[in-house]
Structures are given as structure tokens and as C-alpha cells.
Amino acid sequence: MLTVFRDAWIVTQNAAREVVRGDVAVEGERIVQVGGKYNGTGDEEIDCSGDIIIPGLVNTHTHIAMSVMKGVVDDLSFDDFLAKVFKIDADRTDADLALGTKIGAAEMMLSGTTTFMDLYYSEDVIAKATQEAGIRGVLCWCCLDEDKTTQNGNPVKNCDRFIQRFSGERKIVPGVGLQGVYVCGEETCVQAKELSDSTGAPMNFHLSETRGEVNAHKRQTGKRPAEWLSSIGVLGPRGVAAHSAWLTMNEVRLMGEAGMSVSSCPCSNMKLATGGVAPVPEFDRYGVNVSLGTDGSTTNNSLDMIGEMKTLGLLQKASRWDPTVTPAQELLDIVTVNGAKAVGMSDRIGSIESGKYADLVVLDGKAPNLRPLVPENIIANLAYSLNQANVKTVMCQGDIVVRDRKVTTMDVPALVGESEEAWRKLCLR
Image (tube, rainbow, N blue to C red; front, top):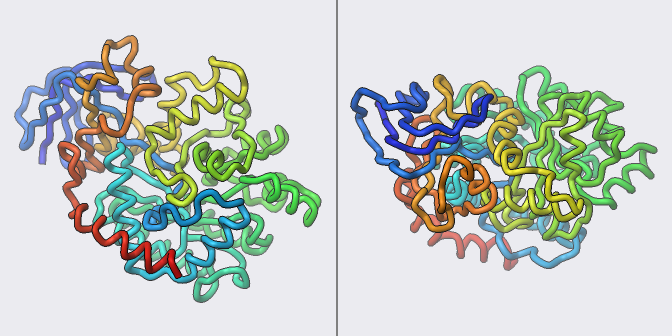
């Protein structure tokens, strides 16, 4: 199958960060030409005259199956929020997990995301629903101490079985998750890291989300969370630390030395009023790869990476009284090439280059909010003017999953029609 996107502005995100005009040709799963005129005829030709094509966005921290739990834990203190969420989690079924995953996938695809990194249990159920949706899932099975989980059996062993079962599945990358130091002792953390090392699986975990979490851990161990994880050998290049808002510069340095990534979640942190702002300029200085996550639909209520990108930039500027930090190109890097690096897929996704997977998002370049549109302002428009309504067509690994703002892989009206009953069953108990 040969698909040709004709006559677009192409924001390649290649090493030179080139923006070119012309065609993108896709054969099967891979990009075969970028820019210029493709001289052949595609099996499908898509007119993109005046439109913009960007790489698919990468969401590096979410809990996709919680999409059916919107609005049940809003406006609560963090402790009350956690208590209520954990209680609801204990009652979840495979059916509502699959429904939440599909609704969340539709929301992400319609806002330009083609890859997401998830942290939850029952990732086997989530994986099957993700494949049906057509999006790419980097699915990290949640590990925590056995006496603190609602899972049947040992969570690390459950994670190992999941990895073995789904390794090599199309558009599924199985990974290791850690809930956080507040429910993960040294044995659990070390075993999870050993599993990641032995399988090459990515690893996603919550880190230093709140000041209370940090202070409690320091009282217990004498060390702050990132320092403690470093001392027991858990930090490493496959690690993606979500939130990371309450860190010292020594912790940032240790994370950089370990080759880590972070997933900043600004909307979630602000909504929960956990305080702290992820030190993005310092991450850059010490070599920590910065990516972006929405967190779940209970803490953000949206899985829109476009809005999250702008929020990250504005929060960094406002909190530092410095409009020069996180400039537009850096923001676009964070949601594309940096996200690809975080999930261990820099060689396959994150930019529009020949040989890479065809993860492409066509944006409506004729929309008033993106005009005027000239080469000199395209990047700024993407960072500060773009919104999810501008997304027209989305391709993930060669499959068109959104066409003219309609999801092609699922009956979305039928799915959302089931969502209210699922919400009532879960949240009104």
C-alpha cells in the first residue's frame, strides 16, 4: 500500500529541524520520501495543499483506562484523591478497562498523539484494546509491594508474564512500571529494574510528585527519593520518571548521569495543587531528557498533548519570570523527538524521515488560528496557536486511524454511549 500526502508544509523534526514543502510518501509502515514531488502515483493520494504535517506526538505518562473515571475525584486534597481512586481501582473489570482504553485512545488520536506510555495494572487487557484502537502503546505493568496491591499474585511476576506475552506484538511495547517509593520497597524496586535490564523493557514510574512524598521518604530512609533510587541502582537510561517536581540539583545531576528521561505533567500537578514546578532548564543542563505526559483522566481530565505542550511552556516562563525559557522549538522537541527517546524508539518514531515508521499528523493549515502561516512562524504557531480541532488526519505506523476528524478504527459514538453506565457502576458505589 502506497500513500502519498501531497503539497504540505512538512515539519520534519530531523536533526537539522528542517521545515520543507512538498510530499510525504509512505509505503506499508514506513516513510519512503520526504519533501519535493513524489513522481509516482499512490494507491491513496491525500491532498494537503496548505496544510502542515508533523510527527505523531508522544505522551510519556498516562493511565489510559481511567478515561471512564472523569469528574469523580475532582477538587479533593491529594490524600483524599488517592484514597478514592485506589478504592475505585479495586472494583474495575476487564470490560470497563477496555472501554476506558478505547475512549482514551480515540481522544489521543483526535489530538495528534500516536504513541502513549501507560502505567497501570491489567496491561494485557489494555494492550488488546490498544491494538483494536490502532494507536501505539508503551504499556508498563504497575509493580508495587505485594502487601499493598489489589493484584492477584506478585506484581513483578505479573509484569514479567505480561512482557513475555506481548513482546513483538505490533504497536505494543511492554514495559515495567513502579507506582512510587511510597508503596515500593527496595526489593520491589530492584526486582523491577532487574526485569527491565534483562528484557530491555522501558520503565515508567512516579517520582517526587509531592513534597509530602519526599519528606516522608526522607524520614524513613534518610534520603530523598531520587537519591535513594540512585543508591540502590534503580535509575537508568530506560527510566522515565513522571512528575519530578520536587527535586534538588543533586538529584537532577544523578538523573542526568544515569541517562534518564522525565515526563513532566504540568496540568495534573496544577490541578492537584501539589506545588513545585519541574526544573526543565536544569534537566537540560544536566543531560536529563525532558518529555511530556498528560497523566490520567482523573488528574488532568484531558489527554490532549497539544494543550499540555503550551501549558508546559507557559508554566516554565511564568514561574521563572523569564520568557526565554522553553522556546517554541524546544516545546515541539519535547513532544516529538524527546518523547521518542524516552520510550526507546528514537530510531523509529519522533521525526519525519525516510525509513522511520509513518506516524504522521495532518493539521488544517487554512484554520484562522494558524494564519498567517509562513516558514518563519510555523514552529511558533505549533507551540502557541495550535489546538486539537486543527487535527485532520492521523497515521500511525502506516495505518490511517483518523480521517477528516473521524476515527476510522472504532465506532466512537457507540463507545461513548457506553461510558455513562460504566461511570455509574464504578463511581457511584
